[in-house]
Length: 381
Ligand SMILES: Cc1ncc(COP(=O)(O)O)c(C=O)c1O
Image (spheres, rainbow, N blue to C red):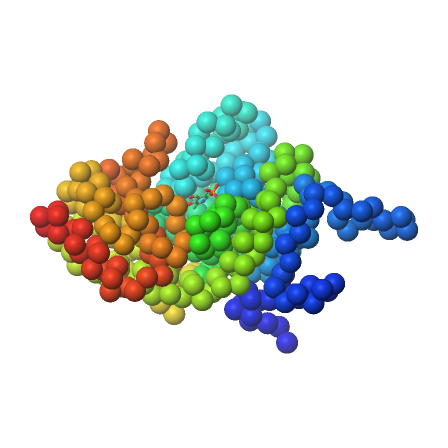
């Protein structure tokens, strides 16, 4: 019997401990492991190479994304850097114009110093992607839905374009999680996560991950580099993240239904010019999201952004005026968060001045809507 996704989430990497019978996965903090003397290779040797708790997490992540191999990292940025650092002088990478500000920072500041050519385009426009991939591209990077404008790109089409041009295709799947979208099934070569977000799920653990479609030379090269750069996830962080994996599908279901209600409320509010949420039929990527995410079950993620008619000042007032939504950065935790992205993102921001991003949490949806209604009442709209 092949277990279904929710069963995998609970059990993958979380088998009872063979030695003690402990049902909850154990946490191993040891940095070093006794060498075998029987001539067989050591299973574990040193924490930076691999360790049992991280190994359990990587087993779970590979199972959930449907990949052959996963690598856990100290942060999402460390995972992003691990892929981008495979690019060499003279090679070209195509990145989305709407993406996490740290990804943009890396491709703007670090890669050009190394002679890597960076093309930044709207990857929802497939013709633009085809044109950018002409003449040889090493890597096409996608993020869907994207941060902070919630743009949705057609991952299966992007995979085809990348592969036709001889490029690898990587996708940041942080906003969707594998509960909603499995890019490897759509042709991606590698999926990246900030596990700090929904996998951790409680705003108390930083981490990142890569999941590879194939355990090939590319995966091996990146794994070997992690050993040398030391960007590994600490065991306690791996343990917390593994715990998060087990409740991920259940949390995502409530996150998604709350977000839909919040988005529908905001879409009717006179102070709001635009709601960026793939679950709204007016969203330009709605039909793609419907088939690519779990839209047919009403699940479109729990991230959204709003653009206010009153622009910058109105957006700041909204972010500062809520009582249940906490005005803080990050996303994917139990608590709802709200943030004015242009102020938070600094020098590399492309966020419209009137945009506020919301991470819809697990509170009662009526309370969340009432909170936004009272904060928007100060807008005079
Ligand atoms: C879509 C996305 N990718 C990557 C990252 C970076 O992850 P981390 O903060 O864990 O380094 C973030 C962080 O907010 C993100 O939102």
